[in-house]
Image 1 (cartoon, rainbow over the protein chains, first blue to last red):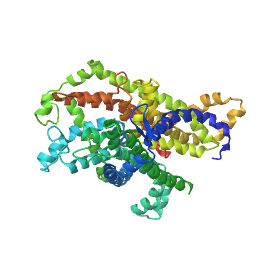
Image 2 (image 1 turned 180 degrees about the vertical axis):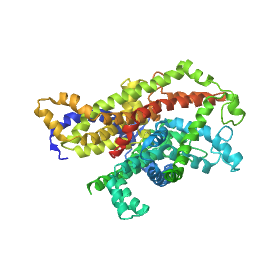
Image 3 (image 1 turned 120 degrees about the vertical axis):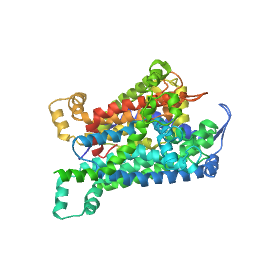
Image 4 (image 1 turned 60 degrees about the vertical axis):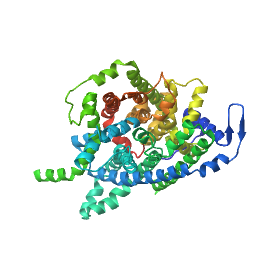
Length: 288
Length: 272
């Protein structure tokens, strides 16, 4: 659609701009302010330049949780995106079953994050949980998310798959629904295999929604906080301490305002950078 | 016909397994919410043997419990109203006009959806304390606008771009003023878009805990934060915890039921 050049449209955008500026720019400036000062109390504060940044970037805690975070987000994307596509492809398109599927799949998306943690806490415990009981007593695998680091890590990953695969599947499903029937008819006339249909019709048509799914899942898994916090509190050891939790411990637990603020900015910049790459790729693919 | 049905049923088996995977943990939560604590700790039972509503009774009779629900619903609705009312005109501007810095503004809005709430915790706390809004519903609603408003603009813009521009022009020729046109003609046209947007605003505000917990202490405490109360000296009150969990799922399910047909349409526009 051709748009008209009209700078008066700013008046319509102004409320959004003011509202978001109030809750984004002011706090952001506070963070920037903290990140370059050493603050003892209201009256004594010193400008320290980039010291906090240097300190934070050399902090092994940051390196560890950053590495854990990237591995975690990578695993999340590698599991959820193919699984979501597969589910979207098998979902029925018409009738009662399709709305039932939709409703069931939307349920996990609407559960508060900490309740998701609680559900799995109850579900996974060896003494009172169904999963813990099946794994420990029926299958004979020793499983304890509270004591064993790899168990905890896998559990947090499974929770994320449980919680968010539906979002990917729903996005892909709606992308698939947008493909006109004639495409499939043409493919049938050409005797295209299922794989060829997927590769040359369905996948290209899903591209834009898939990029959104990848972007959302990347951003949100990169900010994960509540589920591991409720389930394991970041333990055992530091095995499930991701970036957000390292940051909140630093800011609210130890009250290291300067380093925490510098950490925040680095954290935000990483997400911004990766998202910008996705966003550019997305708008680029829309143009073609 | 019969044969074909069988084939399609077999093809659907992985899907059933997935749906089962989604439902089993929820089933376990519901199951546990109807048990007494002695039964929960006594051993594994697939169905409650002593069926009890005591856990729910605790929640509905104790004010500190049920006020958590009211607080949560209150700030979620407040957030929905604020987000929609500011996002509607903005989305219209983005879908109809080009103006100075529009693309940058749009991307800047989206970056706020990307900001980790953990980054904003402390500054938000100080900001709202200093203007005297700490521990009020409006503070949480405003804080949630940070990620809901950009999302609302994004979704609504998609729906509005689907409405042909000729409708606007015809209305202006017929002598409608902008506010009258917007309220009487345009908003009814994008009704389902508003429904979808409201759904997503509800969803993201309802599930968020970190900001909601930090910005409240007593008066506006959300249910998610109240749930940590079940941990007491005598251990965790599993039954009540499960019941509270079940009750947090219910509002979401109601909302899904109302918008189930619109949501796919909303996704189909490639937004969200």
